[in-house]
Length: 315
Ligand code: CKP
Ligand code: MG
Image 1: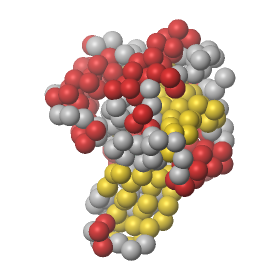
Image 2: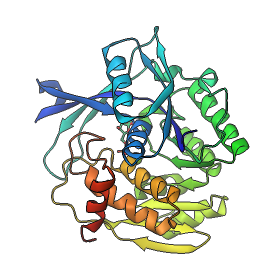
Image 3: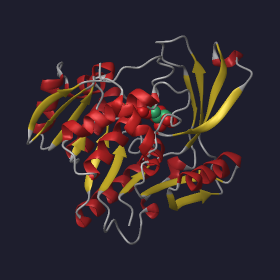
């Protein structure tokens, strides 16, 4: 059985080769994206067995993503090829240092938005240790949401823990109210919740990492990690609370994908039996590595690169 199962939309990513508005860019480099796929990729690079549930179209982007899954050693026996709907993709701009890129999605009606309860593994999640969901996998469509709910039930039945990265994507929700109440209901079912600070503020109405963490603990979430960017992370669980430092970064190229790298660090360290604070430290080390690369998953380390990243002095 895989150690971790995740579900989501694999996307082709076209990154601009030159700065400027996307409409003016002539050359793009192709790679892969999708928050849950980034997490799957990072965990597989660290040697964990990962099962990925998705749908791609019968088109060159779909073929490319299937080949990527194979190259990364991710189990894709639950990735269906949908002959009716296309593979989603996105464009990402290049910006001066410190500025977030422009993103244009082409994902409406995509193959992955047609994920549904039929995509559930018939054998259940026996032997799986973590089911990783994000606010994207549960916002793709009603049918994808139903699939995620069935997976949570399977995780419960199999004794697997559920991790949840809220990953706010306003464009995937009908309204902000629907997004907040929807994401909060999913978080309440999870064993581990990992929002960024501004995500946590918007979702809980609290201001400080301490109060955001308390808000989740009060709702029965046993482990909470608030991502603080360069400042590190704040963790809270039954063992206590701590602020974990961030890592020094030479040059921030692009922060997209950092949250997924962070999740890779946290989940892999928890699988290794580490404390939540040590897990967040590993999350910070990987997040700091990812922001120095153009692609969303290029900076995800192998074990040797991770060991080196952890040696870099904390800020
Ligand atoms: O929160 P992050 O910046 O780590 O997430 C990035 C991913 O799935 C990116 O790869 C993109 O494809 C997406 O989030 C998305 O749908 O926005
Ligand atoms: Mg995120």
